[in-house]
Image 1 (cartoon, rainbow, N blue to C red):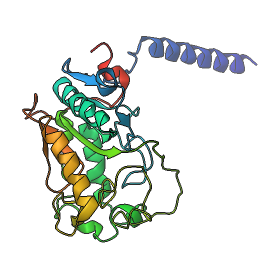
Image 2: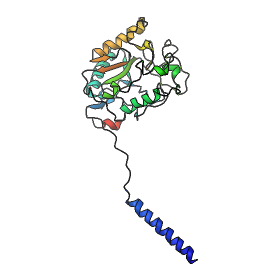
Image 3: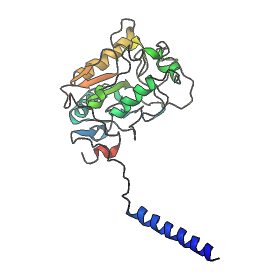
Image 4: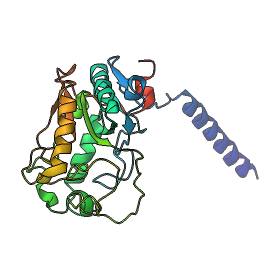
Length: 265
């Protein structure tokens, strides 16, 4: 019995020592998130009428999953870019149209997520909609994926023109090629631009000669409207516009897409 008491006392002493050591040990804390500069704002605070169908916090992306860094479906832009969108929206509303944004500021961690996905040849969940005619092994070579994005500088936006109401994507819906006729591809209520958003196909080039008639006119309508407000189109993507001059032409930010990132701005 004496031996048992001795063992119990030793165990108790050890436990007490461990407790003291644990209490004295510094508490591990997560590194603070990068902060958005004061020049960034939520688009809704500048123009609440612009429709926001932010795709990357959802599973309706070319990867089939939410993108890293997108905490909430909120469009964040530099203040000059947001004000320029407001100017364009005001002109469109007079003509019975409205803008709809798909993506705005994009953190670098999201771009890194794209790169990791592009390097995985076996992940082809959304191939049927977003890249049915492009082999995934060519995404870097063909320029669809890159290690840096102008979106991370804060003055670039992906958008379209729509008629109300919009229709959300329901996870698990059958996929249709993004270049299919409007009646067959995902019905997101935008005017017919000839392809869907984020379509990895040369038909997405703004002035592709195969896009004619109403679809070409719709692209030019969007382009004239945005150009008139100070934006420049990326020729390879009819939906991609950058406000110029950029406030941060050489800085790629990595703060998360969340309301708290621009709270009080």
